[in-house]
Amino acid sequence: MIIKTRKDIASSEITPESVYRERRKFLKSSANVALGAAGAGLLSPAGIAQTGDSLFARAPADINLASKPDWLLEKVAQSVPAPESGPYFTDETKTPFDDVTTYNNFYEFGTGKGDPANNARDFRIDPWSVEVAGECGKPGTYTLEDILKPHAFEERIYRLRCVEAWSMVIPWIGFSLADLLQRFDPNGNANFVMFQTLVDGDQMPAQRSRFASIDWPYQEGLRMDEAMNPLAMMATGVYNDVLPAQNGAPLRLVVPWKYGFKSLKSIVRIEFTRRMPNNTWNDLQPSEYGFYANVNPEVSHPRWTQASERRLPSSLFKPQRIPTRMFNGYEEEVASLYAGMDLRRNY
Ligand SMILES: Nc1nc2c(c(=O)[nH]1)N[C@H]1C(S)=C(S)[C@@H](COP(=O)(O)O)O[C@H]1N2
Ligand SMILES: [Mo]
Image 1: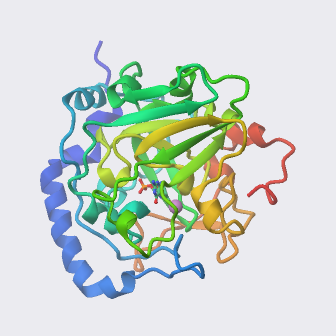
Image 2: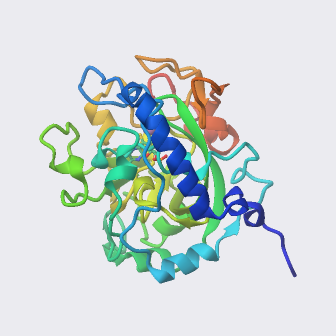
Image 3: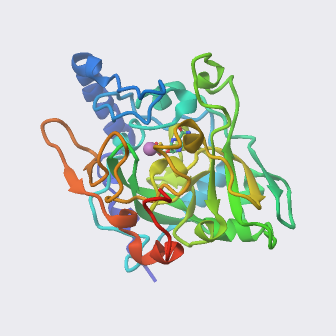
């Protein structure tokens, strides 16, 4: 049986990808010269952003990685599109590959939107391992291959809403986080699960900076029932390829109903905990970034409204302001997780 998949008509295939990227690179670097000065973001009182987003901070697009393991490429190539009928698909216009991979938040590589793409060129994901710890039956150190091998990959097209009020539509490749967590036999005390990003000052320049105000590792947690919701995804690819370093290679969370900062990149540690874990943004500015961080148009950030968002690509000349939806449009899937909770208090 021959099935025509969405992959067959991916825009990245209409122009050969390398040609497409080279052309964009050229256009963009000319634009940067003219507009670069406008790209410096607004620092918050704490001296660190979630800044208001900077419009022009861009870098050349690339798949930034020292190498891609063959077995991973093969698995990614075998991924199938998720059914269009459910929440794993949207027919909203996808944010182009180039924007997805050059407009990033990944503070380990710098706070500018273009810094991750520029500073992560030779990022190494081979070898990679993940430590699993805490309230579970199968703690230990697992190689990336141990982690990924048993799972069939699928492509899911999700909205990503950053707390800074911009958003994208991204075709991720991966699988439900629940399927991974179950393999470690979380026990009855596992009320939360906590994730940590790699700490490696050799590869991540902001981690060796004396000025970084983040207490590395970057860490985020989810309540166990949130983590087990099938919408929560472990992603390992984007746009039919492995993840570029700037998007969180080789393994990242995608929690589409929450602000982007919960979707932690380049995971090296997973811990099941009894108590609510600390998390990076909440530690920095508790009044601005809560543990839950559910997308909610009715609860403003202290310094800006969350009622609408700038959908990328967007420019000064062709702005795309759209209303923000409750739980980022995934209300049907996740609202029941918060039944009876005051979402104004639990922001
Ligand atoms: N380790 C780590 N993970 C991170 C971040 C970060 O700075 N460090 N930024 C977060 C924020 S604020 C957002 S909006 C998303 C952005 O993901 P993207 O660059 O793939 O679009 O990554 C999240 N994950
Ligand atoms: Mo974000």
